[in-house]
Length: 278
Image 1 (tube, rainbow, N blue to C red):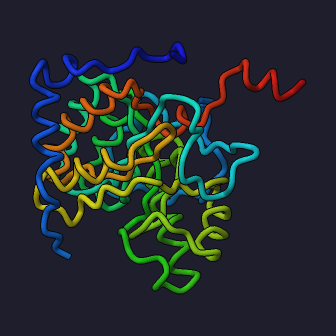
Image 2: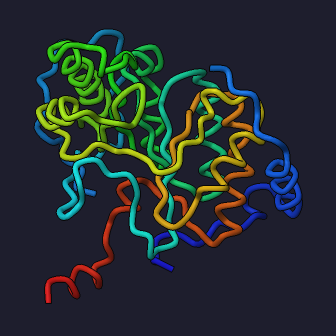
């Protein structure tokens, strides 16, 4: 519909049995809860690397300003059949690779907000994300509660991850998302701007997969809230999320939606820009 990517059919993901599997998952009760420039933007200066991989062959896009949109972006346009799956980048690296591969087989491009220490332990994942056609961003260095830190410590959480991303990808990352939630206090917003991020990436669909123990909890929550323009928050390295992905991708395709990166979700077609200019 937008010329970028054909809608994802169910056969691309799960075959003819996808609809039945999704229906079974959605009918199950909720689970018990336990608890496009490619140049680098100005950002924090980088000290010498510690434990490194070569920079990604495809550099990460720099943070981009979207005029007319708020500093914290919670969703994209509601008049286009697109959604963005955004993942907190931490957890089991093998599960992360599996999740990325499943998205790619379904024709989906996603946004990974990576934790700095996760990239320090698995630096090759930065290249893996970018080379898969996805985009990468900053989810703080250690995934601490920014609201509980003083200003200096909170800024360093943002800046340290930005420096690490620059070393690995040539950019401070396309997006910033606070930890541990997508909410950004006025202080965090100010610190994010200072670090070089013109927007904070929020969400309007929280999967709550971090607390889920069953696939049905994730599929039911996301499918029940998904619509045009949704920014979906998921976890990249959790077993329940990886298991739920084929069902979620099948549901996205069944609804005629396209799974794109957050940047692609917010991009305006040239025709729309021309109409606005008039």
